[in-house]
Amino acid sequence: MDDNNKISKDIRALLKERDAVLLAHNYQRGEIQDIADFAGDSLGLSIVASKTEAKTIVFCGVHFMAESAAILSPEKTVILPRIDAGCPMADMITADDLIKVKAEHPGVPIVTYVNSSAAVKAESDICCTSANAVKVTKSVGAPKVYLAPDRNLAHWVARNTDQEILYWDGYCPTHERLTVEDVLAAKAANPGAPFIAHPECRPAVLDLAEEVRSTSGMIAYCKESSEKTIIVGTETGMYHQLRKDSPDKVFVAPSNRLVCPNMKLTSLEDVLEALERMDNVVTVEEDIRVRAASALEKMMAAGRD
Ligand code: 13P
Ligand code: SF4
Image (tube, rainbow, N blue to C red; front, top):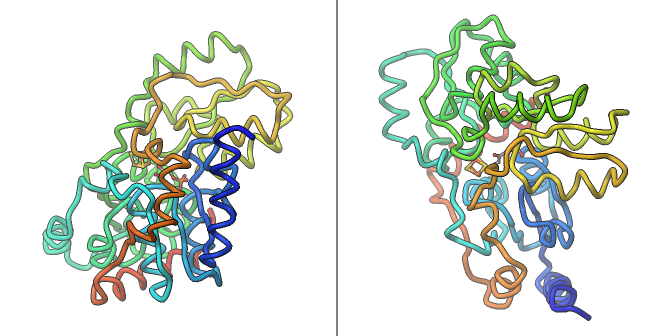
C-alpha cells in the first residue's frame, strides 16, 4: 500500500470513529477530493454543511467556507485542517468598511459574496455564491443593489440584470491573473474549442467565454458537452474532477498561473493530524453568527441561477 493509500485509510477510519463528514472544495488537491464524502462548489458545500447529521465537519477549503459551516451548524464541531488557509479576496473588506458603505447608500440592499468573513456577512442583507449571484440580486427586488466584495462578480451580475449595481473594489488574485491574451492564445491553439470561465475572472475575459459558471456548474457543463476539447478558465484544482468524469476529453488550461496557494495548502497529513487532535476548530461569536446565518439562509433558499 503506498503512503497516500495508508493515510487515506487512516483518515476514513478516524472519520467514522469521530462521527465526522469530510467536505472538500473543487479546488482542493486531487487526493483530498478523492477521500471526501462530498466535493463541490461553495453553494453545494454550504447546503451539505447545513444538513449533515454528523457531529463533526472536516472542511477542506479556505477559512470562510469552514466559517459558513460553523454559522449554519452551530451545534457541530467544524475543523479546518489548515487554519492558515485564507482567502485574500475575503480579506479585502471588513465589517467597518461595509458599515460605512451602508451609511453612504442608505436603503440600498447589500448582497455579499460568501467569500467574506462572518462579521461582513452579519452586516449584509443576503449572501450569494457564484452559482446564484444573479438570481439572488434579482430576488432583492430593489432598483439599486450593492455587491461586495468582488468587483468582477459585480460586473457579471450587472450584465445580467436591469438593476443598478454598486460594488466594492475587491477581486480574487488567482482569477485576476487570467488575461485576454492568455485566452486568445488558448483559442488560437485549440480552434473551435469552447472557453468556459468563472465569474471571478475580469469582464474582458468573460467577454470571450461561451459559458460563465460556478465550479460545479463548470463540471456539469463539461460532463454534458459533446465537445472533445474545452478551455477552462478557473483554478487548476478543477481538472481533477473534470478528467475523472470525462477521461476521453481534453481540458485546456489557458494559463499555468491559475493556482490558489491557499486552496493547495491542505495535505492528507494535515487532515489526519487535525482529526487525531480534534484541533483547528472554527467558531463564530454568537451575536455575529445569528446575523450571518440569516444572510446565508436567505441565499440558500434562492437556489441556483
Ligand atoms: P465556487 O466553487 O462557489 O464557484 O467558488 C469559487 C471560489 O473561488 C471559492 O473560493
Ligand atoms: Fe479566494 Fe480566489 Fe482562492 Fe477562491 S480562488 S479562495 S476567491 S483567492
